[in-house]
Image (cartoon, rainbow, N blue to C red; front, side):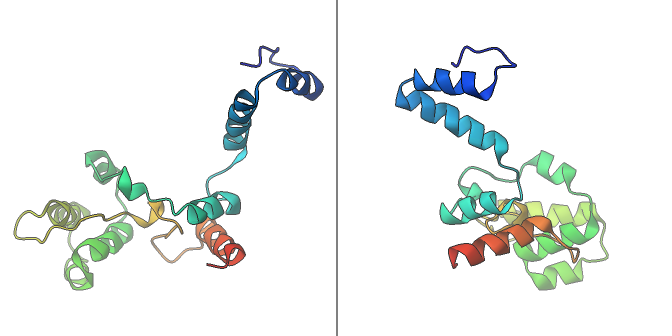
Length: 151
């Protein structure tokens, strides 16, 4: 769209932008901004909070999601969200594979489990929710954003 050399300087790019209609300039600006925002930065968290972003509208756990889950503490914390704390506690010593099976059953409403609708892992929520007790820079950025937005 800009039709400038890869190594064009800022003045050349600015001059080219001045020749474009406003919608094209806004499109370029959107791409530039998207390329400068980093996941976990306070501005990204603030934007997600402000827009009330809800990945649950377009995402649901699939087999790839479950295949990537391997850490026992994380799986057990997610199991508590999906099946309840008592189920998670009662299965804390079970294999991760078994805990994930219970999660799948709850999400599908199978094997005598009540179906859970709209569950979203904390990693996809605004504000971000970490699993575990370690420090999370993304969670910290979310708290900073919430304070700034007075939420």
